[in-house]
Amino acid sequence: MDVKTIGIIGCGLMGSGIAEVAAKSGFQVLIREQNEQLLKKGLGRIESSLGRAVAKGKLSAEDKAAAQTRLSGAVGLDDALATCDLIVEAVTEDAGLKQGIFRALDAICPANTILASNTSSISVIDLAAVTRRPNQVLGMHFFNPVPVMPLLELVRTVQTDDATLDTARAVGERMGKKMIVAKDAPGFVVNRLLIPYLLDGIRVYEQGLASREDIDNGMMMGANHPMGPLTLTDFVGLDTTLFVADVLFAELGETRFKAPTLLRRLVSAGHLGRKSGRGFYQYGS
Image (cartoon, rainbow, N blue to C red; front, side):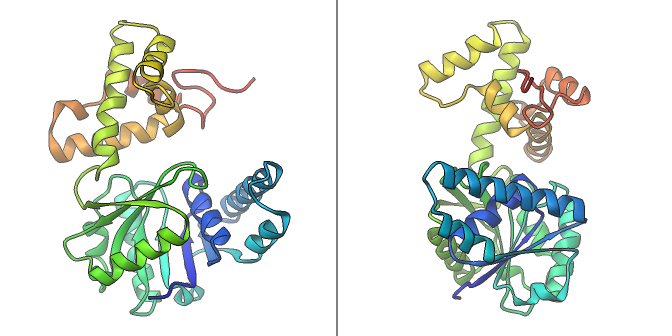
């Protein structure tokens, strides 16, 4: 399929980033949010990101203006989404919420529309199962910040057909992404490996083996990581890390996915990392 129009459901950090990259890559982009406030915030985030790209010389003013003309946003799931060749759902990691969206999109969209989820942890086949097109459902897991991170993790279920995977791959290539393909298994590839690493970093800190700075510097300078585990957890979000860890522990039962007590207590305290201004480190003034 030659994809021309992409729908993005959810315009948070991930959805806005996917929409921005899609628009810069020449796709028409239809963004949908649950209310005007979130839509306005998401569109503002895209505007700011495009502006920074121009200021840094990474994007011309003309290309910025062209990308913005390809973007449109509205509230709710409406019939205009039927014009989309591909729709990427990027809402909160809530299986029930995502299934409801996939059920609604399946009813709105023509038979040729591909439905994808940006989920980082939820079983894609559980989303495909509520549709009449399970062969045209897959995971398209982008990484934050989407305009910067080069990876796109394509997740193929037992029912995703070759044409759907090939179309998603072509879209990713047009976006300038490097792709890996994973089976629809808990954590896919990246989070299956990343989450235990982050949890071990938290355990080392919780047990008092070293300061947070020494833990992070040790991995940055000793293993050539761009961020240490505690800084990276703050960037990902402590709540997101905990959610994914709990999903993996429930699915696989392996102790390496069991969240440390410190992580749960920080999340309960509202210390979620960069998004809240405080996590393992403090941010802002």
